[in-house]
Length: 68
Picture 1: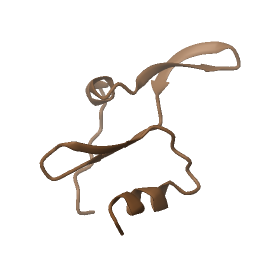
Picture 2: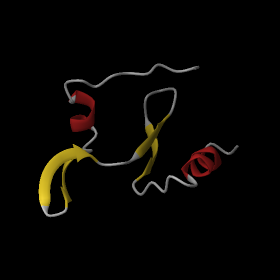
Picture 3: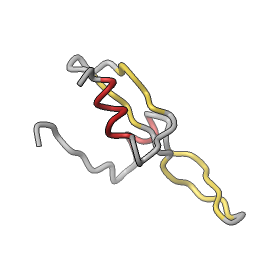
Picture 4: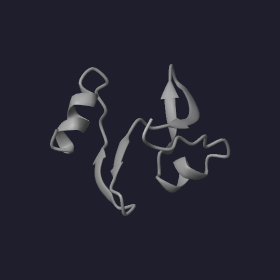
């Protein structure tokens, strides 16, 4: 892969990006990760945030945002 993958085992990154949130399933509340995608340019600037991720066509949306 042409990019670095990380493991956020202490939740530092998800907390900084604001995606470690309270969720609810079957009436039970718990903490979890909100599904979002951040496109970050080569200078480290966030250029686009996808707040609603539709898994079935998300790859195409991301590629379109890059103009591909």
